[in-house]
Length: 395
Ligand SMILES: NC(=O)C1=CN([C@@H]2O[C@H](COP(=O)(O)OP(=O)(O)OC[C@H]3O[C@@H](n4cnc5c(N)ncnc54)[C@H](O)[C@@H]3O)[C@@H](O)[C@H]2O)C=CC1
Ligand SMILES: CC(C)CC(=O)C(=O)O
Ligand SMILES: [Mg+2]
Image 1 (cartoon, protein in one colour):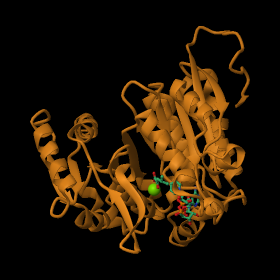
Image 2 (cartoon, helix red, strand yellow):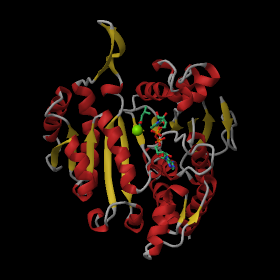
Image 3 (cartoon, helix red, strand yellow):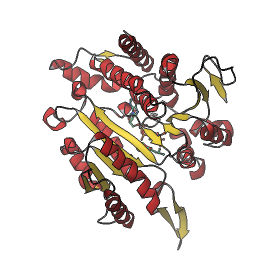
Image 4 (cartoon, helix red, strand yellow):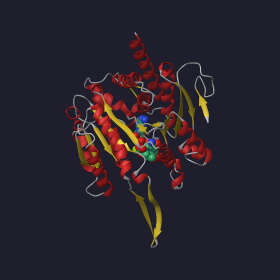
């Protein structure tokens, strides 16, 4: 394990602040590129945070397969389980696509989520009004408030984990099996998280399923109905997933908090990436109950742009904001990071994935002339902006 940063894990405590151990897992492709910007931002903010951060790095995914032949090495898992929080970049890539299923990078991530019991994956689809030019949706559809929908995705159950699974030979031909299985309690705990957030934010809850076909969805609906009695103040409706995909594009303002099972949440959040203009803008926080939370951007390892220094680190930086909010309860710092990311983009300072939308908007006076930045330049611009905001707040 590498450790880096000013203090190092074994340095004596020099302040009264509690110590928080962070495990950083860069992974593959653009993972390390965006994680670097996240760590630099954390370092910049560290002196003003309520905890002293001790950052260690570990191996996961294809990088770990190359190093030790296992996408989730035992020392990475034990470091994750004993950390205060874990950051992950992304895993996977064409290099490892032909490995046996259990050694594929993605299995390392799935096992990590399962072992950490991070069952509630919060995926905000947020585009403030001043950035509405990034969305392919027309202004009148997006609404005056921009886009603001929270997907709460069940993360450690469902078809990604159910047994039996695999490719078997039956009657001389190959048969593939995946099992979609949910226990009542697995549904209830994530639905409860979604209800609580909807209540706190004063928003309606949509539960997305496929109850007209799937038994797991019928149980899901029953559990939501039972939970509803505990939250009589939260308006709830059930929406079939196919209709929801259409409706999210047609009238996103109809939705506030959306709760759904693992596979549907995975697919729908990438659709959300298109609605905000780039998958590279979406953060996520995977919450456990009592254990460390896992923080990861929504996107994957993006092999098509990896190694070029052009990945958008905004999703990772907004993920840092989610860490500040959910692990450190440092709401002011979280809001400052979010505001800094959005303000940087609103000035036309963007990575290449947003450049075309910015150019088009510039032609109609909705965005300054774009200044196309590298991953590192965008990260630095956001850090400067965060510091400016923090200084301004301190007077
Ligand atoms: N959480 C994770 O580690 C995830 C890993 N993956 C893995 O990643 C690999 C690539 O999968 P894809 O289907 O290509 O999905 P992907 O999310 O890596 O990329 C999809 C598209 O979005 C673009 N994109 C993604 N993140 C971006 C960023 N930060 N800035 C600019 N553009 C960005 C990519 O260039 C690509 O065109 C696969 O091995 C897949 O299994 C996929 C999704 C999540
Ligand atoms: C690569 C998979 C394990 C997961 C995924 O696509 C996601 O969590 O968004
Ligand atoms: Mg995905």
